[in-house]
Length: 628
Image (tube, rainbow, N blue to C red; front, top):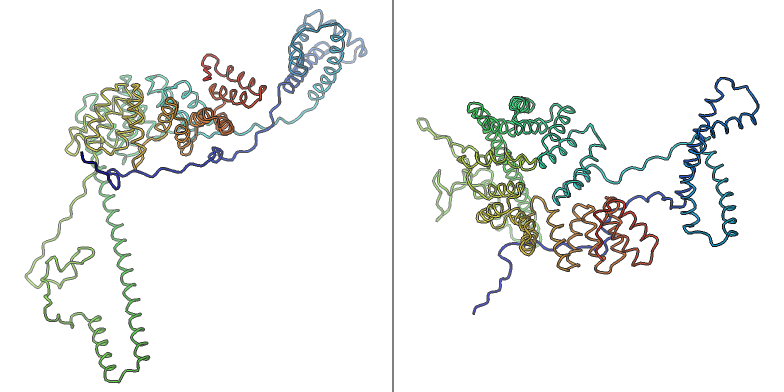
């Protein structure tokens, strides 16, 4: 049996990234939260609010009663008449019931009285104390009602619209569609005049096959910005899926008018014409798209040539500068050596003659003849080319009667077909019917055909349609073309994860993260790999992987994973830091509140544990699942 040990891996792997020792180092600095009132203070403020509301109602009743004659009887008679009016109309009882709830809350929250009194003396003492306190607080509430005070400023949200989009995409990948819709709607509520917010929400609705809501979103996007290219295209896609071909054609043609040099717009128009059987329109649109693709390839080629030319000039200038400095240094060293040795005049003259001869050859190379044993290469041979660039050196002009054949430049060829460049956009917006057409057209192209990119795109389409077996087959074909494709291994991991094969999913995810090049989307890889580690009880690996996700793009789910792993490792301080950060990013996650409750319970803070548990039950009672 022969054992072979390699000095370095056959497939290059990236070095493991170093993680900080403490979780707190990954949490960005945040401003201090304003002090939150506790339950007792909140109940008192509620009492003040009720006093203000009842006072306003009594004042309105008084004005209604004495509107005709404000200079009538004295204040005592007016008070007696007002009380009679309130009692006879039943409003006095309604006001008393309105204040009753606030008083009960003060008794429970401030005085912590929830059981009956044992004797009458204790009850009388408590009622006396409560009466005095309520009377004082009533005066405070009346003063607040009569004084016009500025409202406290509303604090700025801690998450921006970019983070909300990341949270929505994360929830969408985790198939938590209700939470994803909530984040998309919150982005729209932040800024209803941003067309991109409506576009993203419409794309999400298109993925759920809710065509009516998707159409409304894209219509709103186009109404805000009538030159929004993606909005016009996706509105046409939705109309096509609803068999509204006339408005769909209008919007696709509008997209080509808005961006006449958009290869995406012309290709989408060609795919639409192909779907409705318009062969002439299909040929016209795809011909224009191919022209733009060729022009784009030529522009890239010319840009690359210009960059190479600038690099050659820079290298040539550096070489000339180095040569000049070297010759200057040789002249100085020769002069110093002559002064030190004091050589006889005859050798010095010979040295000057040689130096002058060398300089004359430098300034006029035609005077220098090759010595014995040196052959001059013929013109046009490979030896007459520059040793660095391979370009032919300057040759004498041709004599009369001689003709030169011009060198024909090779025209640049596009790296991809127009369909493959459009497929990425179609997969992102979940336009599945158009994606299928583009993939079929790509196979018929001379530059198309099966490739790693084609099979990866086909696998992504099958994954969106939840055809996991067919997606796995396409990925196997992609790996036959390129076994080091990070995207292929990442999608293979997702397929195995969704099919329940956690061992294979873990192997694919680990292989993906070991590659030097990153896949297109790495956040979900970290989250799913870390969740597998949690299921296997490898809590330290789970913590490190969740931290890598937080380091790249911090989300509530990632910080919750860090908190869960730290809780299992009995690192309660680290767990509390991570869970607090998760709660800042999303304070409606019941699992975060549940773990915070358990951390507080283990650290001896029973009151805080009860509060956290109440919040967990409040935010989502039917989804509460404590992992004890």
